[in-house]
Length: 231
Image (cartoon, rainbow, N blue to C red; front, top):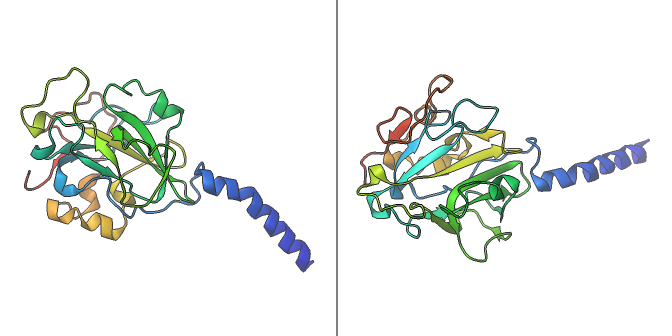
């Protein structure tokens, strides 16, 4: 009987092992040990489930389950200035959601970072990935590229408030299961935001959740948090 129990457990582990590696379930989420950008290089972000940007993910959410980020003045309208980092150890790659993104190659690319042995992943929008890094494994905190903050044919912004932004979606499972980026940070990574005035998770989540009837990405819009002091 004891041998049979061990064999059954071994068979179950063998069945579950591929799922743990692919990150296609929400059974093994992790917290992120690094920030996707240095908070000192940013001036604003959008709250989770706000009416900023556009509804995401469709068709399951009427609000924006993304977090958008605006650059500091030193990084305005640049495609090779604002550094982006791996928030966990994992593999950089693309799925159909990335390669079917209509903005791909117009303002950077969309890519995923699938965290090791976990259902947690980070989807980066508008990123110029470091050449040769696609489909490679990276360590938490490693630089993976630059934010693409100037679309093809767009004029440079006059100030950071008018700059293009980049956005991310943290997911547990597939891309329809979005999470608030700030809620997924471990204590040390979240503490890095305190110098920019973010000390509570309540500051990062839009109250409601109301169903959005319109969207905006203009600084001053409700749901966009300006960091203090702007840099």
